[in-house]
Image (cartoon, rainbow, N blue to C red; front, side, top):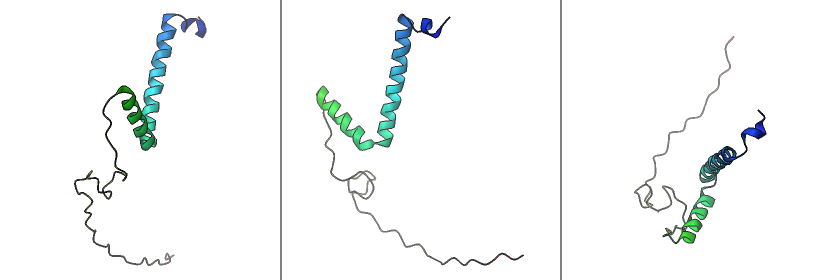
Length: 95
């Protein structure tokens, strides 16, 4: 039985649809991890098209130092104590 014979008819349509869904899901996940700002814009655009509520994003990037409150500090970062720095002393290996 040839490969072309196994992918014809209803089984071939289902197989193609399953592969297309798997590729789309992993492409979406990759987009979300590699390009989060593009993903966020696409999701917000899709929500606008569907008529759903879109959360307004702040101009500051999300992070502990942005003041957006993501880490419950509201931008009040306490300075960390300076680490004691000591120079490295290299000695030649004894033979």
